[in-house]
Image (tube, rainbow, N blue to C red; front, side, top):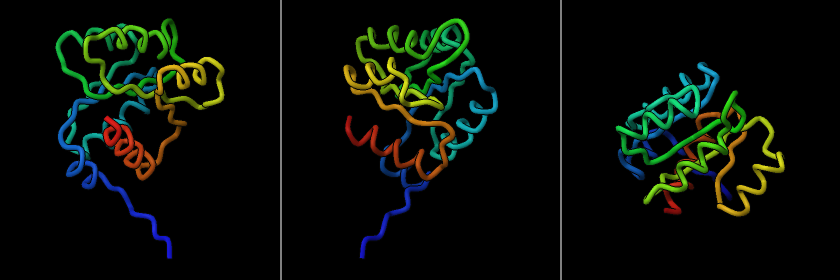
Length: 137
């Protein structure tokens, strides 16, 4: 019998420990939902509505994980990835998108081994993906 283990915020908290996550999305509701889920893990959550705000947050906070919407006005998640990837010790980086088949995302995923998560995320899937990201680091 094949039973799938349920991954909860408590599972993530005990397995991964405390982390700082930066959520970058021009959708305020997505930021609030993400804040709720990551706070349940006991993580510190930083939110930015655009790339410029995200860069300012990096100036004063050590970030372990960036989850960025790929499509945003002005600068995209790819622009943020380009900046972050130049850090001495870059954080884990994940793109969120409603269309994971976009050619540019596929290329970034292939060349940089970046995770791409499809919106909307349910909590179980989110927690499983967090475990996968930090299990591979």
